[in-house]
Structures are given as C-alpha cells and as structure tokens.
Image (cartoon, rainbow, N blue to C red; front, side):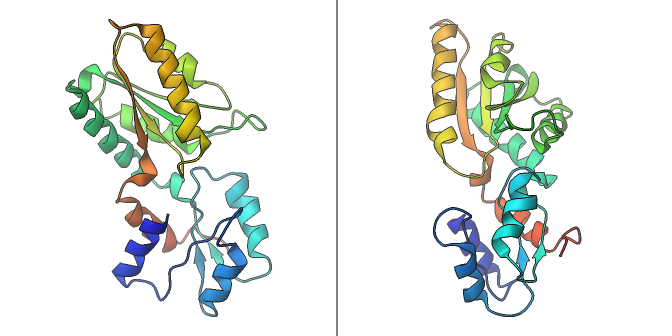
Length: 220
C-alpha cells in the first residue's frame, strides 16, 4: 500500500494522499488529522464489498464527513491484472497459456458463505478470454476450497493468483503450504503448480485506486 500511495502522490492528482490501517499504525484517526479539512475520499483497500468496507471502515471514520468509495477489489480492471499475472507465470513456466489452468484464490467467509464475490466475477471474465485451459476460483474459508479445486485440475499445470490485499499469513503460509502439499501429491512426474503472488502487487493498482477515488458510486 505504501508504494501505491507514493505513486499516487507523484501524480499530483490529489492534494494529499494518506494511508491508514484498521488494526495497526498509522490508525485512521491519525490519517484524518494529517489530512485536515476539505473533501476526503476514502478508498477501502479490500478485495470484497463486505463487512470491512461496509461496517468496519465507516465505524473507524466516526462522525467525520467523508465519501467512502468502492473497494479496490470490485473494480472491473482486476480481471485484467489477474490475466496479466497468469500470462507472466505461463511464460516463466515455459508452458503455453492454453495448456495451463489458472486458479484465483481468495479469502471467502466461514461466517457468511455463499454470497456473490468479486473473486468469482473476475475469474469468469478471465475464463471468457479463452486464453487458458481452465480458469477457476477458490477460497480458503468457504467452498470451493483451494485443495479441492487443485484436485480437479491435476490434468494441467496450474498457476495460482492470490486475490488478497496484502502479504499476510494467508499469502506467507497458508497458500504455499497447500501448494506444497498438492505438488507432493502430484509427484515428480506430475504437472507443476506455481503460486504467482498477489494481484495487488501490480503497479497498475495505482490506476485502480485512482478510478475508485473518483468514482461516483461512493456513498457519504
């Protein structure tokens, strides 16, 4: 997030650009103090339009009058970033994209499973390009689970794209552990499984943040 914020500052498009965390430093109220008065547009750096964007962010903002914009993960451009990352991974593997299965992995929710997720919408859009053998979406905390999805893709090399906002425990530990277990299950003669990092590392995220910041879909 810090790198994206710095690049946003460099555009000169906004009077100030600050970042804040719901849990950690810098806290939201400190960022609001640094911004001061004027029009404030808050872009939630979350992948889904769920609890954190709809409840936790407004609660942290308190009674400060701001415009809350759509979270970055619902932007239609996310599908293009997923596609780009997947194609780069195919090149790295030395395998043509039409022979590769892409698995887009997100968090999901064990508390409220089954709701429509941006994750599935973006995966469907990438599948519609017909660039890859298959494109699926899977979650860590609700069905379809990642391990089950990988089991169904054993006829192909698999590129995994993380649909996560940051490099937390899911990215550092959970997904790599699942990938390692799957690669072991496939054996030395099996197709490769590669975790190609998270889509939000892409430099083009700056444009997505900017688009959301000027979106007329925000609610005050």
